[in-house]
Length: 503
Image (tube, rainbow, N blue to C red; front, side, top):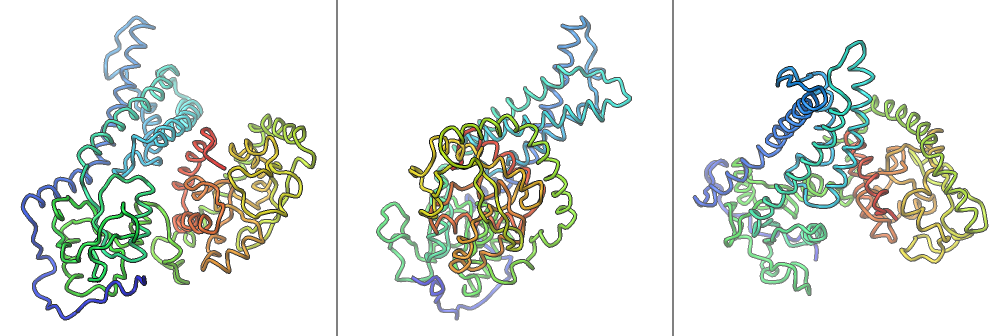
């Protein structure tokens, strides 16, 4: 089935009226506007709630401390240390933002969100204590005791998690039966549907096709769970289709080949605040990937490509890498020694495994890792399977907890690696991938890293299909290269390590 034939339709339909003229059923229009209003005010409402919560918890703890420890009531205004409160509030809000706490689409009921919130809170606590008692308190006698500061940093994340979980449950309750309308029934539509089902998105799906021969068939032939394909006439850009409220329209077909009359109605609906996305924009915004099938040699020149405009961040990132590597050697020294001894005592051969990898701008270097497989295993299959018998007795554990990657701190220190970036692949595999996957070389536009966007979002690759899927995430990182994304990756990496999600 060729996606480019999806749009073969008569283009003789007359054009009439303004692009701003669109009709909507009255009930559907009210529902649509209510939902749009909720989505617009959602992040600001949560931000306001968090500000009130932080201030309230801080003031309450100050009053309790004064009453029970000092035996006096110091009053509301006297209990507020604005410097300390701001020093607590800003990092706390930034931490919640980085894990998607203000994003309407984030499922805050999921254990991963709760875990990342707790991990981010620990990081925020370290930053806040360091900043308050080394900068804010310099030359000033602060009246906010450490017990109050620490209590605020403990109580706020707990309350934040609880009310966000409740909000997500409420959100899921009111969104039951809502739908996503996929325009098109070709390869892109199938890919989009599979991705959304994999993420267990609770929405129903309406699929509409321009091709009459596809109408009445399943989107995925032979799959009884996939939706039936509807005629394109059902897409009237009102708020509902066949009684289902449509939250999102996704154009999963060639936009340039859509008939002009349909395009006019689509643009009109867009101006009337209906949520309409192209296939590419939906994947990037909602699923946070960059599909390589949509790339061309002009890709680095597109709007939103930050790498070639971020020279200053490159320099700052290198300084942070050096500092983090030095600190990492100090903090991880017990784990380095323990892991080295475990590797030596459980299997014959060297403790450190060296392999030639491809780095920045396709320059090769030797990567260092604790050996997790028997000597000579590199001569076997190129991919590692879940129950691979080549693992040493301790190998599977250190691979899953990422302890095997601790020696790579040396690679970071000398500049071969960054802490964060696409995975550095074996040179032999890179040659194979570049022949098989067009534009695979774009991932080498940034320095590879110990951890990265693909590593924290996708399990260990064991096939060409997995490699292509991880490339989607790597290219997303290359295009949106930034401090905010790097910090989010750090939080997610700690989650992966603590709960053994890596492989």
